[in-house]
Length: 157
Image 1 (cartoon, helix red, strand yellow):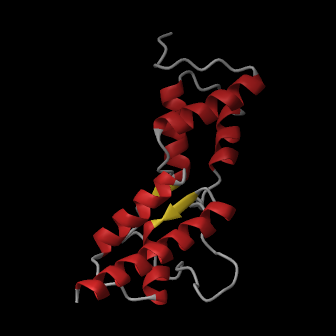
Image 2: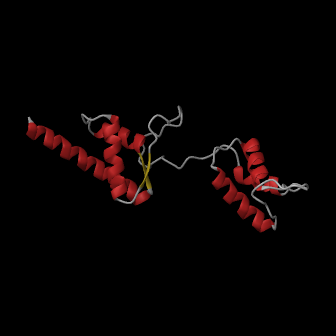
Image 3: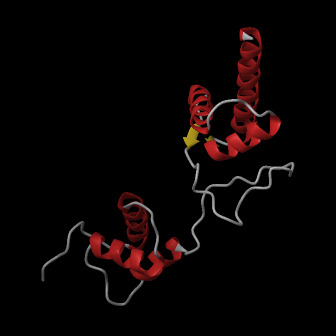
């Protein structure tokens, strides 16, 4: 009995290793939900989803890949078709054009006086969930090209 469990564990480790290697060649990350679905299609291991995620993540990190813990965040209708030969997993994309909105905000005739105000306006117009640091970097680069000085806090007149 113990011998069969060892064989099953080694088989699972080999499938995980093959999956991580395939992701390593084409992408810089592994998504745990997609990995789990692919692995469970190949063989149905007797391990919990959490344990499978941990094993995939450990090997991915060991191989220098980023790990996206995405279990439960898959959207209906956007599920990757695992039967296709090319991988359909892509980095998340936003429906709103955040860069275009940033350009529009900075090109207003009445200039934005602070970085905080520009970030707030950008969030209001696009509904983006990007971090403040990400938006600040975007706005800083765009403002530098246009020669606009954005302070971090609100200015007093």
